[in-house]
Image (cartoon, rainbow, N blue to C red; front, side, top):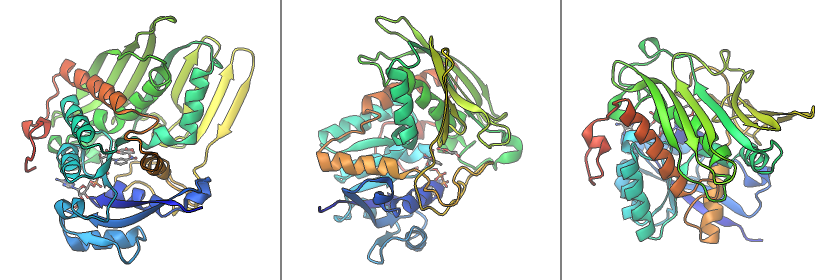
Length: 392
Ligand SMILES: NC(=O)C1=CN([C@@H]2O[C@H](COP(=O)(O)OP(=O)(O)OC[C@H]3O[C@@H](n4cnc5c(N)ncnc54)[C@H](OP(=O)(O)O)[C@@H]3O)[C@@H](O)[C@H]2O)C=CC1
Ligand SMILES: O=C1OC[C@@H](O)[C@H](O)[C@H]1O
């Protein structure tokens, strides 16, 4: 059988671009995906072409892969099928628009943009150009998430009434980050909400919204503790999801940089609790790359499962990593699942991801907008704008 080959162009060469590029080199057959293959054909660094070349080496790209010193050159490369955008949140809107204008399909890191107006503009552009566009919420494509969604929708838990989800680390900004770091820097759209809170929202949404036949957007009330730079250092959200028959469901999504979901980062603490009238499913920390679940039912059933990522992989932390080894030796990171989804979508002619529609990305972005509105959190105009092009 001839395989569908997806030719990737990598836009930016930072921490996550490196993890993603390495995962692309893991043979899809190791995860029983026998119909597709991935190849990195080009990368660009805004720093220099030399940096892009070093990146290509780090991710074991073929010698023929092209190294560019500008993102513009990358999106103009006719050999590239899809661009992976791996810049800070502040830059996603401009970078994705650049790629879509050049006629490229796009997988863009989370958070998709800094606000809903930008997400809406990108969706419109992708649809006008008939291009594939997806938010890289990698966790959604893991087998553990497929299992969790099935558990939530199958009636195993009875009617799901509420979900608690948290992603927080004990990394006080005053001692953990230089003010220029993207985690706390407003010019790079820093803060817990856009970087980490989106995973808590992901679990709340995939258990209470994605699984609904006719989902309706939730309302939200929230509390934020800001850091001195104006970005959030701790955020708590209470979402109400309206449902026709079962009545409202509640989602409690929390995030922060002051205390941790799991103090020793060893996966002891549940990061997610999906609760119904017959029982609950716990998903253990970290919410972005969980590898363990525990189902506890009222009838006495207790079912624990492990979900190691298929390998082989080199095992590394995140470059901006704060505690814990979430990527053990011998396992892939797990970013290949979302890459596989891009390959399958393009092979099948789909324009969106299967497990998070563009509309759902937009609804989540609107929730984050509302949280920022309720708490007076504004980012600099030049990164909130929908004007294009803007030099950042
Ligand atoms: N899915 C996941 O698990 C993770 C996702 N992320 C997401 O990936 C994105 C990037 O994060 P991460 O890789 O950790 O960030 P890094 O700071 O490590 O890398 C960002 C890269 O973006 C490029 N860049 C372009 N303009 C700027 C600028 N003004 N300031 C800083 N960098 C710039 C640089 O690459 P160059 O010089 O080559 O142009 C830089 O190396 C974010 O959206 C983040 O939320 C991050 C970590 C984990
Ligand atoms: O997406 C992410 O997941 C892991 C975190 O370490 C990182 O800050 C965040 O961007």
